Figure 1: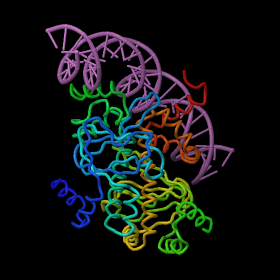
Figure 2 (figure 1 turned 180 degrees about the horizontal axis):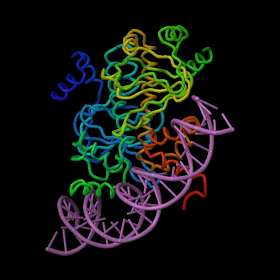
Figure 3 (figure 1 turned 180 degrees about the vertical axis):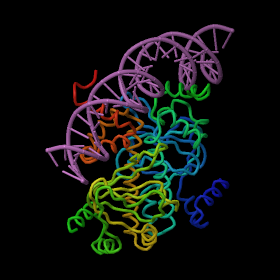
Length: 195
Length: 195
DNA sequence: TTTCTTAATTAGCTTTTGTTAAGTGGGTTT
DNA sequence: AAACCCACTTAACAAAAGCTAATTAAGAAA
């Protein structure tokens, strides 16, 4: 808990101590065991989560009922069913803990209302949004620039911890490829390399 | 001009007339001919654009020096070198007019500072950010859910105007595939379909 | 009009991925 | 220990995409 506050301070240096304590009192701590969900597809929901510890993922279902991991979130990253929050719709995705995790969650409308009076809250929310946007853009770039095998290599280079912590089947859909293909790619890389 | 203000009012109904006129006075109108750029890769830049008319794209270079179109922006959508704005880096992408277009551009730091005093500005910026984020997420979902041919189909269904207005070579990289492949996909779709 | 240039299509071949199915191994449960 | 479950791997073949190059089409320039 203490260490988490320290991390927050480091990540958002402009937050005063009073704001942080207000924030902690507004937020709700939630602990999830591996496989437990924070939000389920179809639910109406209005909370946004900041990951304190662990690893979560958002997944949607494809036409075959398979889970497609759209995004992972780890320490100090925020995760939410954004379309659901912004458009007031039932969630189209599920947020689930990949390993046991701790979150602090906030009511989205409350946060935005608070922000109107307290600029610090607004700044915090905007920063979180901007970060989330940059991550999404980076992900789109990976898909447009790199072919499946290269995407795996880039993921390995940039976010190796994901490859260590998430099972292959999640990673495969996250990379937009088939689990069988990903296994093959791994082998190609580990053995004599290509060409 | 008049019609544009009407569109703004429709898209952001909470903006008062005074805010809108303030906004218009703060913004700078810019007209781009086809192929002209708003921001070039490598430049430092701090403006964010709202498209009034036309069609723009952001592209980056891959390792072979080919242009990869990461995102399109059309009427009432915002476009900017986000990573450049948020992290104060030289732009890693170029923003270019796909056809002759009109923009209104704002200084990003000014807007954020203004927002601290005037909640309406903040709300506008957050709404724009949230929309941009939703678009990026949708795009990631397309990549993870659908194979190249299906991605083209989805694009056709959801954003057919892009397919009418943007040349194939831009669309191909936008969809993460080779122009030759896209041409083949088109043919496969138009002729007897698959199977 | 003819010429030039560039985008798009088509073709032939290679490489990669998708698909289905059969192993393999680790970890639980009984 | 045996039986079971599940993730991952491996294999074999089909389908799709990548790559190179040649051809066609269309628009701009001479």
